[in-house]
Length: 621
Image 1 (cartoon, rainbow, N blue to C red):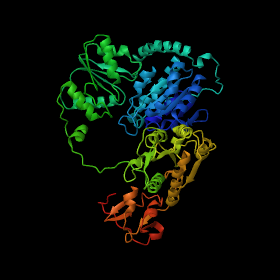
Image 2 (cartoon, rainbow, N blue to C red; image 1 turned 90 degrees about the vertical axis):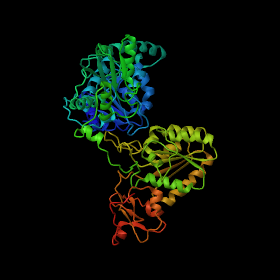
Image 3 (tube, one colour; image 1 turned 135 degrees about the vertical axis):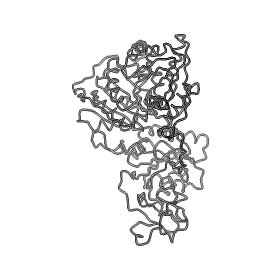
Image 4 (tube, rainbow, N blue to C red; image 1 turned 180 degrees about the vertical axis):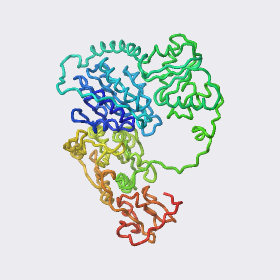
């Protein structure tokens, strides 16, 4: 996997400290290092991306090579220290891996880290494949150390999660324990030093740009008056598109092909060589028109008579992932060649054969997920009161879907708690609930709760504690006590933290005990008369806890279908007007049995003598 290649490349570069916060599509990088750690590399899941970057920065100013991993929205959290570190510089090589997510497939935004590189004046590497990612991150460490600057490394989802055979180098030994921090005023950022270092930053950018013009993963080939420019995974799409068009038997016009693997600082000399003799250029990239703008600026600066086309001209889509089909169509139009793909070709089969209509499969909470029980408890106990439910980032965001319909807002990590405070200002007579997961609580929830306590804002903070970071791959966090170094640390108690920062009403309960949970919700809502109240729903994720015996429906007793109408559990189906539980999906959470008005649902062992209603092929959820 591309993420494994990145982790292995860091090992080959002699990385000493690896930090990060889990976020798809980056999550597998750090565990790859951890699994191969002989003990001389410090590896940690930090509480958030800002902390991760600052820990790595401390190691880097002491001379150790360090790596930070995150997804693109995590860079927003880490932006404060990274901008200052760009001015301060590093001694040991430091690579900040930011996995971008075109689509987006699993993110709130489609932001492009290349644009952040321009803003922060940092070099950025943009790999096109797992093989390149392995070699390129080694180069990134070397360049970072040589120029004394942190470096951004920007794989995208298809590189992170693509697979390829990678030839490995010998792993370098991590920096020796004898490394020591050398005291020097250069590590204390003051305005005067920032001014001087800003000048140095501007001076080094053209030097790196010149070096990038000869970088081995930047390439220029071909000749003609037309030019194609690409980057990252899109370079693979372009290669496939040219093969497809060539296989159609129509001769393609002569053209140049430029691939940019280091978009900032932009390899100016290489781009000027590319421009020589060209009339028109088509730029194919994800996500921002970054290369397109750089080429347009360069053409204007040099007063070149060349037309640069791409996203701004409408030739390439402005959002989402590129595809082989879309790129082939775009290149055919740019070349002015007819494109009617043969049905026998791979792309023709995809484009010409009408695909069957697939059933809708929106993402849902897993069968047996304790978050579903927590939402049901809050929803039922607040039926007669005006309540607004602010959500957050995690599995529980899926509570927005019907029939739960329990997430009214969702902005970013930790914002559910603070948005609830703003909503209270506008609508003080409503009850405001803020849902947050255990990992997100530690990531960015605590400061928002302190703000609510300080400003005496009456909200109910609902912590959904499922004992893991579930959505990104079951990573540990401070509340679990496990670390990536294999240590078992003292667990940070969420209830104790809440009480310590001034929350007076703090109560724990098991969301799978519905009646008890509903009573706890009412108590928490009533306690907001004194300010912030907190309710902690504790029940482990089904993927870290063994399942209980599955449940079964007595078809003769089934009358209400309340379990189907209210829960949205993927294990419960409707067959011939009756509820049926798929025992292969059921985790035995018992919630359906608790809400059934006819006592028609029981553990499988109690009704195993009764026949289960058959599930015909037409069974629908």
